[in-house]
Image 1 (cartoon, rainbow, N blue to C red):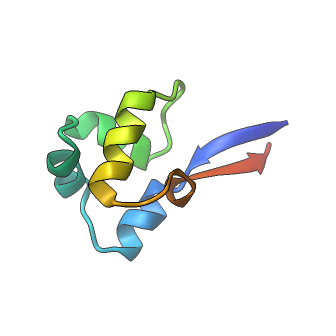
Image 2 (image 1 turned 90 degrees about the horizontal axis):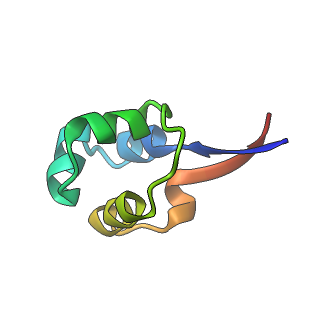
Image 3 (image 1 turned 90 degrees about the vertical axis):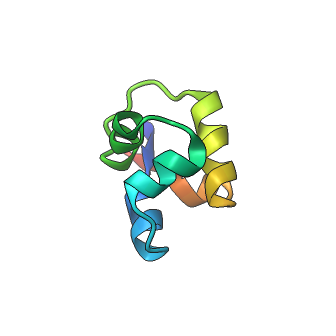
Length: 69
């Protein structure tokens, strides 16, 4: 079975961006960003994803990956 996983932690760490900074850039609360960072999201929110990739100036494939579970 294929599963979508966030690799936001890897992206932020490699670009030296904190969760707090991303929260401010994207205008999304820190707890929401933290759940994406820790890959604890059960439903993807297209609006939040759009704000995150806009704030990071990246592609969706930079922060999401599909893996076999």
